[in-house]
Amino acid sequence: MQALVDTLTGDPDMYGEFFSEPVEIESVAVYPIENYGSAVAPFYTVLSVWVGCIIMVAIVKVKISKSKYPDATPTQLFFGRGMFFIAMGQVQTLITVLGDLFILKIQCVHPLLFWVVGALTSLTFTLLIYALVYSFGDVGKAIAVVILVLQIAGSSGTYPIELLPEFFQKVYIFFPFPYAINAMRECICGLYEADIVVYLLKLLTFLGVGLVIGLLIRIPFEGLNHYMEKRLEDIKGRGVVLRDGQTLYDLYLERTPLYEKYADIRISETGLDIEQTVEQIVDGITNLH
Image 1 (tube, rainbow, N blue to C red):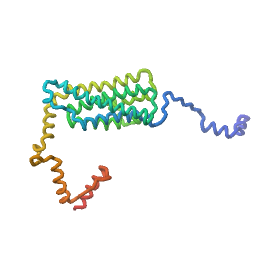
Image 2: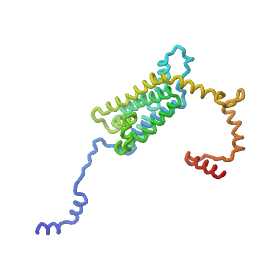
Image 3: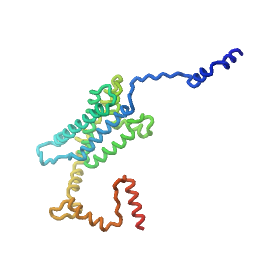
Image 4: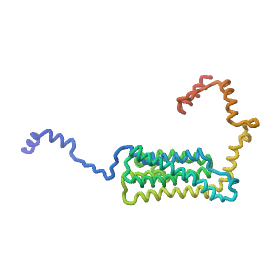
């Protein structure tokens, strides 16, 4: 009874503090991160490297004419052109890494190693994307974009892979993003044993995938790619009527006023995104009837 009385007449502030937090938790950050920007820097850095590679193969011609180098072997042509893209990729990555460190001022425990990981990431991504485009042309560009979309959604760059849909949990290991991101995290937060070596070795396996695509898988598709390239280059053969000396741009300038004059619907897409533009088109067609 006395114990009950002592309890009921005790200090209410002490009891309130105890019951509100019966267990005192002490958090110890083993690999502390300064801010959210530094935490997501690996994902966006890796993303920028991949996007930079796609832009390169989109604006610079990937294949060179064999007639210019008749004595060169297919392997020499592949690596000869590929070295240019690899060099440009390294320049892009160096600029990105320096921007992370000195402009954005992200946390980075091992800045030199951060650049090394970026350079290996660029080498792998550039060769892989270059091989896809070299082997499959525009289809290869589309494949690179599809891979990019899948990796943005399921590379564990912003959320742990365990929180993502089951599909991404099963397929993410077959893409290079997770290994490059994890290797960069080691540089930013601190190294744990030899994990960074494991991540880089897994990343570099995709270097081998690129070589296999560019040197072996490409061979059966050479005839089809050559036919597609010729069809794209031969404007007249595809049914576009041009006068002697007239270019496709000249034809565009000539026909645009006619299209605008006789069009039933004219839509300005200025300031509109794709969905809004489609809605304007649908509304215009609906109002015609």
